[in-house]
Length: 304
Image 1 (cartoon, helix red, strand yellow):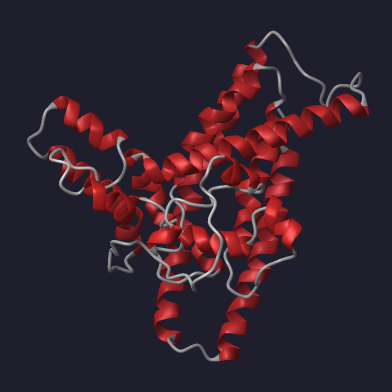
Image 2 (cartoon, helix red, strand yellow; image 1 turned 90 degrees about the horizontal axis):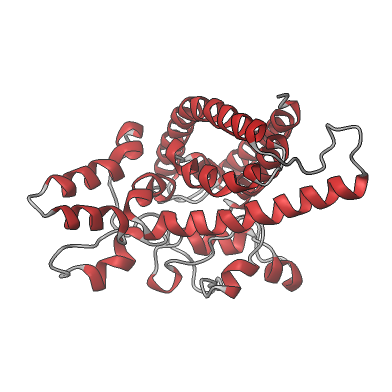
C-alpha cells in the first residue's frame, strides 16, 4: 500500500518540531538559565536517545506497516476511504473521525498502562528520566513504547479501516504531544484546557511530586483523564524526572535502565507467579509487599 500520506504528516510534524527545538534553545541561551551546563548535558543525552529511538523505530514501523497491510487484505470488510473511487466525502469523514477518536482513546489506556504495568514501564521510564523539561525531553523515547498502540489499534484494521488512515490519525496524538514539552507556554483559555491536552497538563504528567503522580495520560483529549479519574491540575511548580533518579547521562544506560532493573528482579530466586507479578504489577511491587504502599507512587507512576 502507499503510505505517502502517513510519511507526509510525519515529516511535517518532525520539521515543525525541530524548528521549535532550535527556537527553544536560542531562548534558553538568551535568558541565561541558572544551570546552562546541566541543561546542555541533559539536552545532549535526550538527543542521543532520540537518535537511538529513530533507528529502532524505523524497523518497528516497517513491521507495523506489513502487519496492518496483511490483516487488511484478509479482513472481509473495507470501510469507506479516499483511495476508493466509490467513497463519499461523508463516508470518508466518518471513517476518519471514528479512527481518530479510537486511536486517541487507546493511546490513553496504552499510556496509562505504561505507568502502571512494570514490563511496559521498563520502556516508558526512558521518557521520564530527564530532570529537565523541554522539547528535547520529548525525544527520550524507547521503540518498545509503541507496542501497546500497535496492538490496541489492530482491531480497527480487523473492522475494515484502511491502514493508511489508522497509521496517520494514530500518529497525530503522539506527534502533537511533542509540542507540549515546554515551560514557555503557560495555561491556555479554560475551554481549551478542559477538553484538550496542553503544555500545562503535560508538565503535570512529567512531574514527580506525589500529588501529580499517575495523571494526565491523554494525548489530544484530556476528557479521558477527567472521566476516568486521572486528571490533575497544575498548581505547585512541577519538579521533573524520575522519583528514583538514575543519575546518569549515558544514553545507552538511559535507554536500558528500566529493562536492566526488571531483569535483575526477575533473576532473584522467586516463584513463577512472583516473576509474573513483577511483569504485570505496578513498578516497585515486591513479593513481601514491604515497598508496595510507598513505592507504587515513587518508582513507576507518573514520572512520565
